[in-house]
Image 1: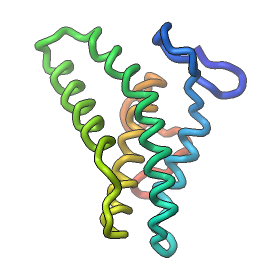
Image 2: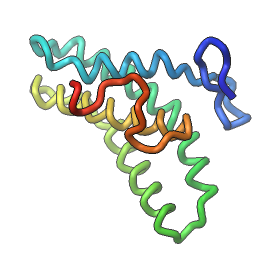
Image 3: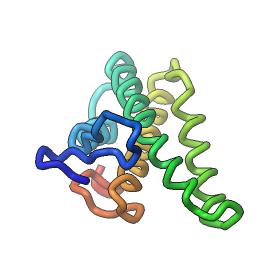
Length: 136
Protein backbone atom coordinates (compact mmCIF):
# COMPACT_ATOMS: atom_id res chain seq x y z
CA UNK A 1 0.00 0.00 0.00
CA UNK A 2 1.31 3.46 -0.85
CA UNK A 3 0.55 6.46 1.35
CA UNK A 4 0.05 9.99 0.06
CA UNK A 5 3.47 11.05 1.37
CA UNK A 6 5.12 8.73 -1.17
CA UNK A 7 5.88 6.10 1.42
CA UNK A 8 5.30 2.44 0.72
CA UNK A 9 4.17 0.36 3.63
CA UNK A 10 5.92 -2.93 4.13
CA UNK A 11 4.13 -6.08 3.03
CA UNK A 12 5.56 -7.66 6.17
CA UNK A 13 2.89 -7.17 8.83
CA UNK A 14 5.45 -7.52 11.64
CA UNK A 15 7.37 -4.43 10.47
CA UNK A 16 6.00 -1.13 11.76
CA UNK A 17 8.40 1.01 9.70
CA UNK A 18 7.05 2.28 6.39
CA UNK A 19 9.30 2.22 3.34
CA UNK A 20 10.15 5.82 2.42
CA UNK A 21 10.83 5.34 -1.28
CA UNK A 22 11.54 9.05 -1.81
CA UNK A 23 14.29 9.15 0.80
CA UNK A 24 15.82 5.89 -0.40
CA UNK A 25 15.68 7.13 -3.99
CA UNK A 26 17.44 10.38 -3.04
CA UNK A 27 20.21 8.44 -1.27
CA UNK A 28 20.63 6.31 -4.39
CA UNK A 29 20.84 9.44 -6.59
CA UNK A 30 23.47 10.97 -4.29
CA UNK A 31 25.58 7.83 -4.36
CA UNK A 32 25.41 7.47 -8.13
CA UNK A 33 26.32 11.13 -8.70
CA UNK A 34 29.12 11.12 -6.15
CA UNK A 35 31.92 10.61 -8.67
CA UNK A 36 31.34 14.03 -10.27
CA UNK A 37 33.57 15.77 -7.70
CA UNK A 38 36.55 15.09 -5.47
CA UNK A 39 36.48 11.78 -3.63
CA UNK A 40 35.58 12.62 -0.02
CA UNK A 41 35.89 9.40 1.97
CA UNK A 42 34.00 10.84 4.96
CA UNK A 43 31.01 11.67 2.75
CA UNK A 44 31.24 8.20 1.20
CA UNK A 45 31.27 6.67 4.69
CA UNK A 46 28.01 8.46 5.46
CA UNK A 47 26.41 7.25 2.23
CA UNK A 48 27.75 3.76 2.88
CA UNK A 49 26.06 3.59 6.29
CA UNK A 50 22.82 5.09 4.98
CA UNK A 51 22.67 2.63 2.07
CA UNK A 52 23.37 -0.27 4.44
CA UNK A 53 20.44 0.89 6.58
CA UNK A 54 18.15 1.05 3.55
CA UNK A 55 19.28 -2.41 2.45
CA UNK A 56 18.68 -3.80 5.95
CA UNK A 57 15.15 -2.40 5.77
CA UNK A 58 14.39 -3.74 2.28
CA UNK A 59 16.17 -7.10 2.41
CA UNK A 60 13.76 -8.94 4.76
CA UNK A 61 10.83 -7.94 2.56
CA UNK A 62 12.61 -9.18 -0.55
CA UNK A 63 13.49 -12.45 1.22
CA UNK A 64 9.83 -12.88 2.17
CA UNK A 65 8.83 -12.39 -1.45
CA UNK A 66 11.48 -14.91 -2.55
CA UNK A 67 10.17 -17.43 -0.02
CA UNK A 68 6.82 -17.39 -1.83
CA UNK A 69 8.51 -18.70 -4.99
CA UNK A 70 8.75 -22.41 -5.61
CA UNK A 71 11.93 -23.61 -3.89
CA UNK A 72 14.04 -25.41 -6.43
CA UNK A 73 12.80 -23.37 -9.35
CA UNK A 74 15.15 -21.23 -11.44
CA UNK A 75 13.46 -18.00 -10.32
CA UNK A 76 13.91 -18.92 -6.66
CA UNK A 77 17.61 -19.80 -7.13
CA UNK A 78 18.29 -16.58 -9.03
CA UNK A 79 16.49 -14.47 -6.44
CA UNK A 80 18.12 -16.24 -3.48
CA UNK A 81 21.59 -15.86 -5.00
CA UNK A 82 21.03 -12.17 -5.71
CA UNK A 83 19.76 -11.51 -2.17
CA UNK A 84 22.64 -13.45 -0.61
CA UNK A 85 25.12 -11.42 -2.66
CA UNK A 86 23.50 -8.14 -1.61
CA UNK A 87 23.59 -9.24 2.02
CA UNK A 88 27.29 -10.16 1.84
CA UNK A 89 28.21 -6.86 0.16
CA UNK A 90 26.25 -4.83 2.71
CA UNK A 91 28.17 -6.51 5.53
CA UNK A 92 31.55 -5.41 4.16
CA UNK A 93 33.29 -2.44 5.81
CA UNK A 94 33.98 0.56 3.58
CA UNK A 95 37.25 0.22 1.66
CA UNK A 96 40.20 2.39 2.73
CA UNK A 97 41.19 3.45 -0.80
CA UNK A 98 38.94 6.35 -1.97
CA UNK A 99 38.35 4.94 -5.46
CA UNK A 100 37.59 1.46 -4.11
CA UNK A 101 35.21 3.06 -1.59
CA UNK A 102 33.47 4.94 -4.42
CA UNK A 103 32.96 1.73 -6.39
CA UNK A 104 31.68 -0.02 -3.26
CA UNK A 105 29.18 2.76 -2.47
CA UNK A 106 27.92 2.86 -6.05
CA UNK A 107 27.46 -0.92 -6.13
CA UNK A 108 25.50 -0.73 -2.86
CA UNK A 109 23.38 2.01 -4.45
CA UNK A 110 22.61 -0.27 -7.41
CA UNK A 111 21.72 -3.11 -5.04
CA UNK A 112 19.48 -0.77 -3.05
CA UNK A 113 17.85 0.42 -6.27
CA UNK A 114 17.14 -3.18 -7.28
CA UNK A 115 15.61 -3.94 -3.87
CA UNK A 116 13.47 -0.81 -4.04
CA UNK A 117 12.27 -1.78 -7.53
CA UNK A 118 11.40 -5.25 -6.22
CA UNK A 119 9.49 -3.69 -3.31
CA UNK A 120 7.53 -1.51 -5.74
CA UNK A 121 6.83 -4.53 -7.95
CA UNK A 122 8.69 -3.00 -10.89
CA UNK A 123 10.74 -4.97 -13.37
CA UNK A 124 14.49 -4.45 -13.05
CA UNK A 125 15.54 -1.20 -14.68
CA UNK A 126 12.06 0.32 -14.79
CA UNK A 127 12.19 4.13 -14.96
CA UNK A 128 11.61 5.75 -11.58
CA UNK A 129 13.11 9.18 -12.06
CA UNK A 130 16.39 7.86 -10.69
CA UNK A 131 19.53 8.11 -12.80
CA UNK A 132 20.33 5.12 -14.95
CA UNK A 133 23.75 3.86 -15.97
CA UNK A 134 23.65 6.03 -19.10
CA UNK A 135 22.62 9.22 -17.27
CA UNK A 136 25.13 9.17 -14.42
